[in-house]
Image 1 (cartoon, rainbow, N blue to C red):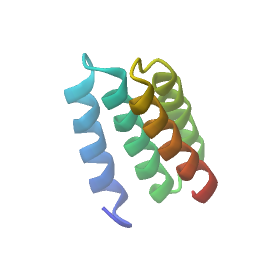
Image 2: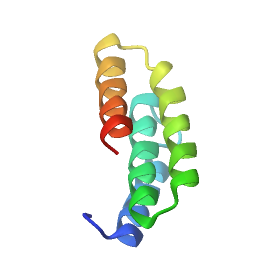
Image 3: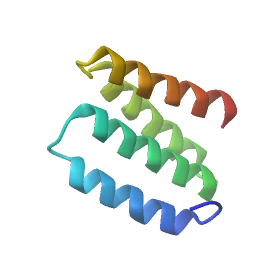
Image 4: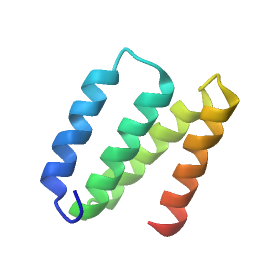
Length: 81
């Protein structure tokens, strides 16, 4: 969805809907996708809120490998924006 904020947002919202009752790992990635969509749209404040929620969920992931994977991905997102 490179450069296509509306489409990226649509698919990120769908991901969130499908994972709403699911594992924190998948919900965390749905929020990460929303953050990317809002970044593309130029909505930095909204993107930061989604990143914060993604981090919160990532910290609650029980599997250490999965937790590390999502936290590493979030770190790359934050540092390379």
